[in-house]
Image 1 (spheres, rainbow, N blue to C red):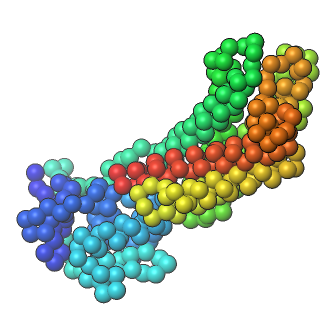
Image 2 (cartoon, rainbow, N blue to C red):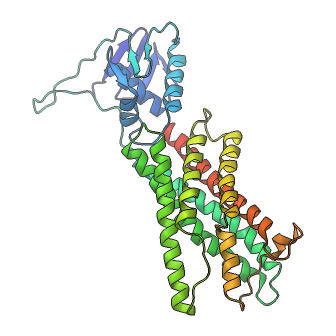
Image 3 (tube, helix red, strand yellow):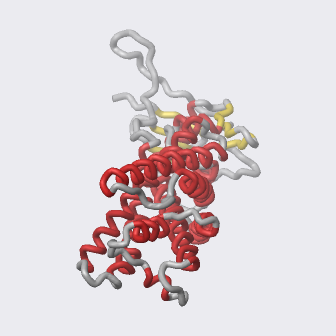
Length: 358
């Protein structure tokens, strides 16, 4: 089989074998960065915009400008190039990059049917870019649900004298997951959809996350209230709903953008901590306004049904409160929102970095 090879300086880019060589030496370049170099070389002398890199190299996987910057930086290092005095890759500020070295175009034999020959495609099809962050975000929500469910489960189990501790723990774990997973799905779906509709706008994905959280919160409250009214003849108090979903979704969307700005191979502890604090602040604000999240909603359920054996008083006792009081609700809401946002932002960034470097 005839190889499709581009030559520039003392380098050879073999598209068929997906190799970059310097003389006889095969250089180590990961697949994604090799695709970026191939695009530059094939468009030698032409400006390649940032949007085109994101569309053709990352193929819809949402990444930040830092990912492209890191890609070009790595390629320059491999080629022995310098940004200040480029021989190969020139930066066009705020627009993109241009390959400026002289490239010897390959000769490609005509196909047997007499049609026009073309270079073997460099870029391969990858999974839908939207599915990776969506799945990762839902996984992060599930992780937050497990951690929160275990915490509330241990608190409730420590005070339940009639129900078995294991049963209480499992019920609380299921309830927490029932709230966290749909909530994460709504927030992340809104974020990803808005980003795909407007890839370069930072504000739209955050607004999309807020809308997704509001929608899931509204539906969850509607179904929950109607379910209790149908089964027990009356509904609990003002449990968490659209307003809480809107603000938590807004905070989580901002947290995702914040963690995305890391330059390393994954989320950095400082950014994750800041993202968690951002979401925790929203949780505190909601609790101060008397708007419950999961813990507050559970307390409302327990108060609405006196025969309930659900008790979260153990948390209140840490603050010298009788029952699940105001300070307990502030702490619970802050931890819930902070854990939810940081878990989603972290798992999405891990998945994004892995996909970008695949």
